[in-house]
Amino acid sequence: MTLQLSRTAPGLVEVLGPGRRFVLWVQGCPLACPGCMSRDTWDADGGREVTLEELTALWRDFLDLGATGITVSGGEPMEQAAALADFLDSARDEATAVGREADVLVYTGYEEDELASLGPAARRLADSADALITGRFRVAEPTRLAWRGSANQRLLPRTPLGRRRYAGNADRLVENTEMQVFADDQALLLVGIPDRGVLTQAERRMRGDGLTFGGGVSWRP
Image (tube, rainbow, N blue to C red; front, side, top):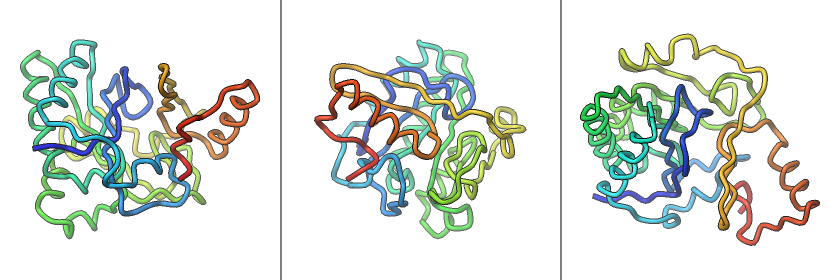
């Protein structure tokens, strides 16, 4: 089985869930929320195809780096639910093999009561998550809720591990939004939930410093 993948963070991420995390963004989203910072993940034919074995091998490398969890975003993970659920089964086996307990956080634009209507694969993916963040991104509803982009989105722990790791975070507010930056000679990757206007300001400032975006930016078509 293969997965259409947009990208993975090249290093451990600490701003999209508790602890140090392996973060992946899947490709393809039919919801197309206005104001989304990852418009480049909407096209189901974009990104690149990877095998689950490749993805599991990459997760094994992140375990060696000290990863304590996985965050799945997108795109819309429920569009590739079967492949993701299989990957998460393998990922848990890999973590168990090295004596580590790794939690899974899945972002979905669907509401909790919509998931049941998406079919058995989506229900299986939801059941594979230790916690879900649900709900469409609404650009007109900014929030300081931890790990969420808009005030309507809900954090739902679903397992004993999820309840332990995410306890107290459902209503936790953060004073300042945290972002991580990864860069190489090909791209600049901003990870996290930015405040409104931050991306445009950052783009303007970098252009003022002589930096150009030959491949464009993810938050515009």
